[in-house]
Length: 84
Image (cartoon, rainbow, N blue to C red; front, top):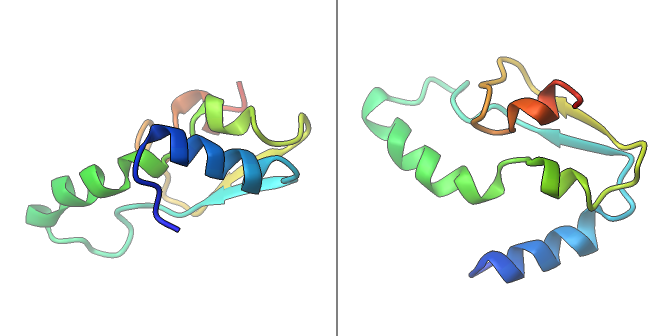
């Protein structure tokens, strides 16, 4: 399912993440993305970045993990990767 709007995305997170022990994301740019494709990739993936709001749907003791290298404020907010 590809969410069509913010409500659909939040609904999806609520269903999928609510019982999660771990939220894991991959690096958006670790696969030698050509320079001329980076902005397009950011625009496409931006709605799926891990935010504090998204983490709030998970269990209170849920941990966040990221495949390195992690780009701060890209695939996850700085507060998420810092555990804040």
